[in-house]
Image (cartoon, rainbow, N blue to C red):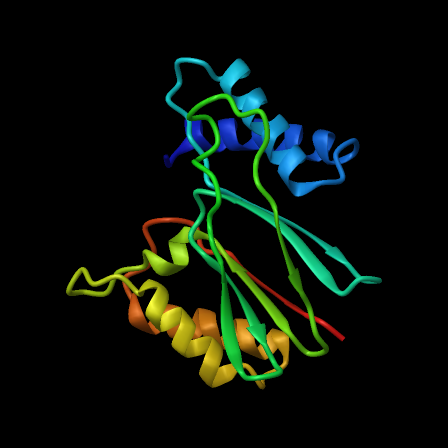
Length: 180
């Protein structure tokens, strides 16, 4: 949702997430605990959230992630110049109690790039009500992967803004993590 009530609920969920992160080192366990919190504390509000949570193990060069109803995020694999989708394994948070959320491990190589964003990026609409969509995100990643992360992000936001010059209907957040 949008507006002040939604912002207040999300702020409470964010606070709980930070608290849970102190005691849960696994993305699946963390999102399971957050899901149970939402169901318990927000019963009757029809509050549902998508979430992507990841943990990078620098020693193993591995990303462990859990995706609950969030759009697929991306791993740009430098060796082979290809994209790997980091897709959803579970339902939205707050829909039903869960005993555990699934986790996926993916190897990370030197100069691989993890591209994370909110759904507002793919749902941005132009004057013809056409969404920016996953395909444009993928094309951007493949064409601009050589840019430094700051320039990559700035270029992505610029492309989104040019696509939807009247503004966005939802929040837009982008984070790029490049492995060294």
